[in-house]
Amino acid sequence: MPVKEYSRVWIMWDPIPGWLNTASYGLPPRRAFEAMQAMLADWRVGRTSWEGWDTATQRSRESFARLIGVPSADVCVGAQASQVLAPVAAGLAGRRFLVPAGEFTSNLFPWLVGSPVRTVPAASLADRIDSTVDVVAFSLVQSADGTVADYAAVVAAARAHGALVVVDATQACGWLPFDGSLADVVAASAYKWLMSPRGSAFAYLAPHVRERFVPFAAGWYAGEDVHDSYYGGPLRLASSARRFDISPSWPVYSGTAPALEVIEEIGVAAINAHNVRLANRFRDGLGLPPGDSAITVVDVPEAEERLRRAGIRAAVRAGRVRASFHIYTTDRDVDAALTALTDG
Image 1 (tube, rainbow, N blue to C red):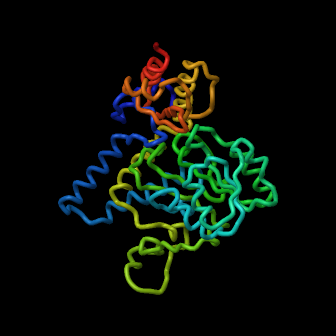
Image 2 (image 1 turned 60 degrees about the vertical axis):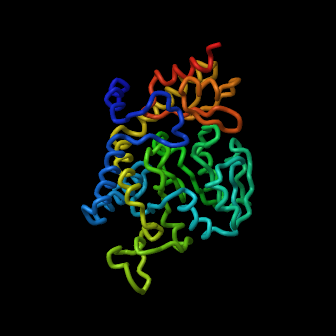
Image 3 (image 1 turned 90 degrees about the vertical axis):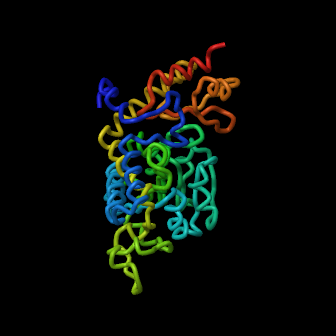
């Protein structure tokens, strides 16, 4: 979408100026918020049965699959990144993992529970993959500082040594274009850059590795036919990745489906161009070189207090301010933050 059309895009949101913290949580498009409110209103008075609400779950699955370029049959739905990674961790228990130092713990703790894990600097991850590595697990975009991984290099090194690739795309999906099919597993929580209510998450589970994983959390919603899976045996799980589904939160997925569909309408490439441009406007105003991320960290004296006084909401990670820019962020937001950090 051309930049000149962004004024039409911005009316889809209702942000209070100064929100630079999407890396903590994203703001819902108006239609997503309204869809969730409509579902809650129906629930409050018992207006309808649940089946209509549940159509949003499949819409969400299909939209996520399109966003990362994989078949929807290979995507399971869940609640959080660590939860959708749990069967992966169980299926790969005892394998040797290589993980970036400082990795967000949703993509670390599941492996540490049952496997040997070696950590290396994120910048050297691809170079450190060798025959001693069975699985390389990493965030496509690092939560702490916004560093974008060299996805192609890591995948190439892993394939050269027969290692599996597990990607946490929570801080990437929604603004960074990437081909999920290059990995073996891609997990993402949807409440950040996918701008969904907290409590929806997805995992791409490639068919060639899915057979290693056991769906211990399976319930009626993981059945081949959910309406024929309410009672009794025998076990009749879905043949697709749906066997790893957990029963979804209907209010959450009611808001998730329209949020993901808005991203598809705008286009991830257009969102990427907008976000990175604003991040680089911010970096330039602070005398920093341009980058390739929608997340940037700055070390300015009293930065947290200066931003707070100006009404700018950002995060602090490892003692530095972390600012994150998404499709609803404006040049005015960036300039207000720069004024707060550079005046006086």
